[in-house]
View 1: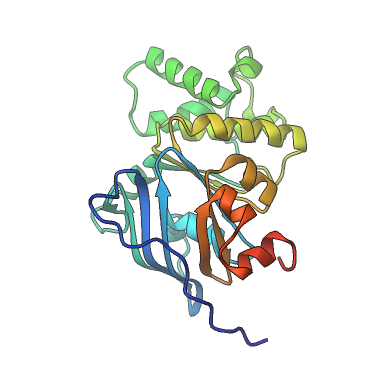
View 2 (view 1 turned 90 degrees about the vertical axis):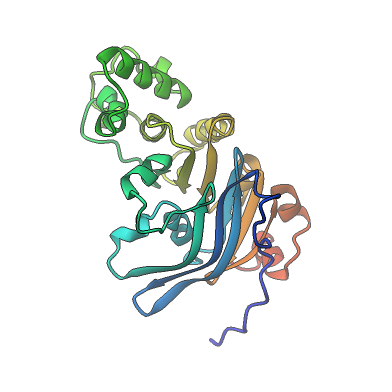
Length: 272
């Protein structure tokens, strides 16, 4: 089927010094290729500090590809190539001088399927601080683990079994453990790629409540297939379709009065 040429996106104008104060991540003209196939086309998107930004759209529309470009997870795919500019606090994250390990400590990631390490609950959370040399003593490490588990809403459920395997927790608890693991290295941004898709409604509600609490301290970008979830947890929503960023706006406006007919069609279920 021939696709019509997409309309011009409603991406944000270039960042100027005066309006950049609240912008944590700025993407400009981002194109992503997997070999010869182009997955993203000329994406301009700002991620505001201490907000939750949801990325929505049909399967295969480029939202997860864009998310992974924000901490260079696409680097691990040999055939992937990223063009354009992505800055974190004004610094180009694709600059050759950037330490990618340090970048991924600043921009953490929680994946679709909970993936605790085959270690104890304590060691899952302590892993990042240890490899990044963030502590000088067992007492400091204990405090980091305690704080991270508290921030992830898990401390009261696991405090008496920290030496037991993280893989022995329920699915929802495992996902919160993965969030604690991400939080433990004090990131500035947390990326979440459909973090609730493998969870039941009760576990999902806990994760959503947690996301709302975490934005006090972190900037969060979440890919979700659930428009209801986007409406519940995010302040801004970006709609992707066929590799293009169609529209980005305040979440409430996106779901009540979108500017683009493609957004309207997706939200009302005419396609997707």
